[in-house]
Length: 399
Image (cartoon, rainbow, N blue to C red; front, side, top):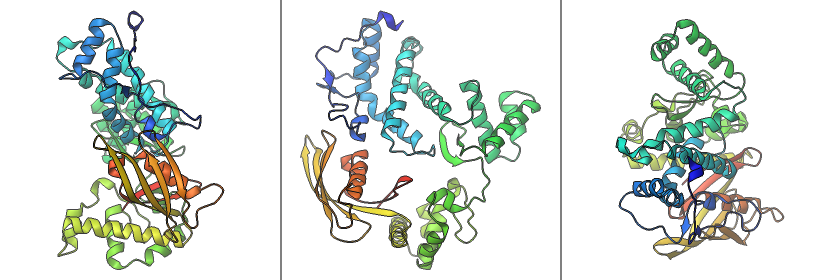
């Protein structure tokens, strides 16, 4: 039992302060809450930390494990958030899920049996998924009696979306009668009228597809989430034929009829290159991204959304990592660029100079730029172009 364990952190402190100024946790820190100072002692395998925790009944070693496992855990949570229909940059929600996962990992530590041959990271993998799924289950507008039933509803949803005989397939999979399978199908269809319903694939990972609707949804409801269709259409018609085709093929949409296809079946850049003879995969990708940027500029001109361009001006490295940087930003694709100074080590930022068209009182564009910069790895951010709506949150597109 955990009651028999100590959690003696003598000699170690959190590397990053969670809330130093009382203004909420920033993404940079949320992704590093398990990091320790000084660095935990090196081991050949992370499982050595777990074995030491069990042997010495001291959860200090569990903290050592989390210190090194945190990057992998962040990746799984981001993947989960990125397809669930919410804001993937919601720091509070990210942290809530992360702490739920840690609690599950801690509870399951007591059930881990090293003699069975699996390392703890392998053993805990499905339980982390269950923890995220349980968190999601608590957010749904509809309810089920257990996590098992929740998974079965989602399984039926996947079958309903991907097969022609969902009821029989479900009956075979769960060895249940057809009447029960029909009941689950009714539940899935009923959810359609309550909220988007995101599902798992056959391997249990989420696909990010809303299966409660058929494939004739209006593209604006999915891709633009509230942007007026007329403005999107006007902007789209200003693109040339090649740009229109690239966007329609790659985004699996038809701008004429509004039909949206499955992203699973959208063409790769290699396939797009074949469609445009003489092009390469990298050439097709560059052309696609230019088309996205051009459409974004046109939508800004239509007043359908706002956009910010970012350029890394200078950077300072410590221990081969970017510790600080200065970025230029441009509001709504026009006017003089402003400047932002970012301290990645402390997760803070300062506005050096406002860009033209930025709001003097609220610094709206600069604050959105800072929020975005701190949500990414500093090594990944050099030149970016992201767009957003004030009411609906942020949507991002790299250059």
